[in-house]
Length: 262
Image 1 (tube, rainbow, N blue to C red):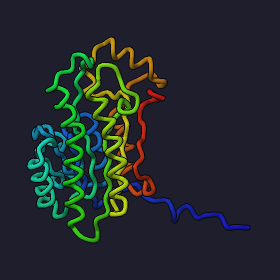
Image 2: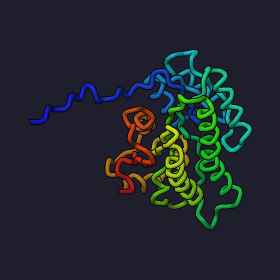
Image 3: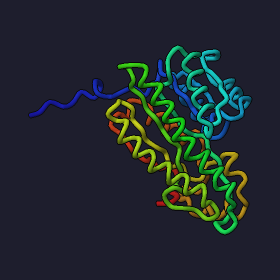
C-alpha cells in the first residue's frame, strides 16, 4: 500500500515576504486594492501612477510605512517607464521581481462614434503601456543576474473575451492584453518569469462609476451572483498568481466575474 502524501511538506506559503512588487495604476481602484493585499502578504510596494499624489495616498494606506515607495509613471512614455524602473531599483536596492500591470482607462462610445484620439488613448494606455512596462521590468530583472525569478500579472477584462457594447476600444485593448500575456508567458517562462492575467468582470471602481444607470442595471442582470465585484476580490487572485502557490500557472487567464460572461 502506498504511503499517503505529507501535505505539510508540499503546501507552499502564500507569503510574498522579501519581494519587491511594482504596481502600475496603483493610485486607485483595483490597483490600490492590489497594493494593499500585496503589502499584507509581506511585499514591499512600488506604487506607480500618472498621478503622483494618488500613488502617495495609496502608500499612506499600507502597513509597513516608509519601506514602500510612490513614483510617477506614464505607462505610454518609454522614458517615463524606464526612469521609474531605475528609480525603483535605486530606492529599494534591487529591481522589482513582481509586477502588476493595472493602469487602464475606459471610454464609452459606440463604434460609429469613437474618434481617433479616444481609440488611440485607450490602446496606448491599456495595451502599449503593458508592453513598455513589461519590457522594462523584465530587462531590469534579468540584468540583475542569476536570481531573476519573477512573476507578472496583467489586468485584462472579461470584455476582452466577450466584447461589450459601447467599449470597442477598451474591449479590443483587453483582448490584446490576453494575447500579449500568452506570448510573454511563452517567451519568459524559460527565464524564470511567470506571466498570467486576470479578467475582472464588472467591479465597483471609479472607472465603472461613469457608466449610465441603464448600463449598470443591464450588467447586473447578467451577473449570476447578483452584485458588483469588489476590488479586493480581484486583488486576492492577483496575490495568488504572484505567489509560489501558483508556481505551475503560466499564461493563464483567470476570470473574476461573479459568473458574468460564462
